Length: 112
Image 1 (cartoon, rainbow, N blue to C red):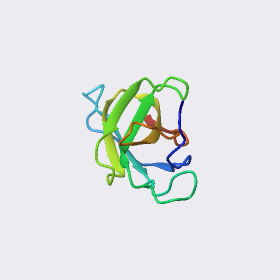
Image 2: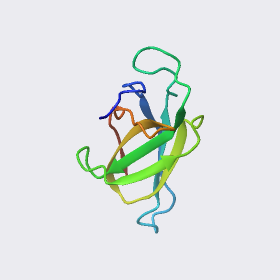
Image 3: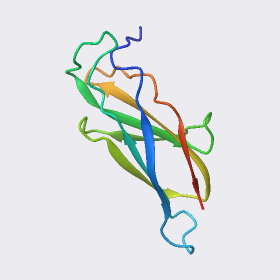
Image 4: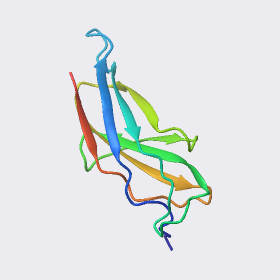
């Protein structure tokens, strides 16, 4: 049984996209920023937020890579070592009991 404990909407914003050097084919990076989850789906204060999980990949249907953000107060993360091309990102929140929210909207960035 999957419980809907955390907010169903996470707003994901990509605030920067850089490539460190033309000589580094996997040197691109994207800074992700999202709004913190404060309420559960019933509108009550969320007290057991454990962190966030970032998923990303080469299409909005193939978010193969994951990063766990263990600090529930952290609302930014820089994804590094991205190859040139378009990348897609989504963030979900999870609680101390392991319940995960629905993912945020999918955002994308092109690495040149």
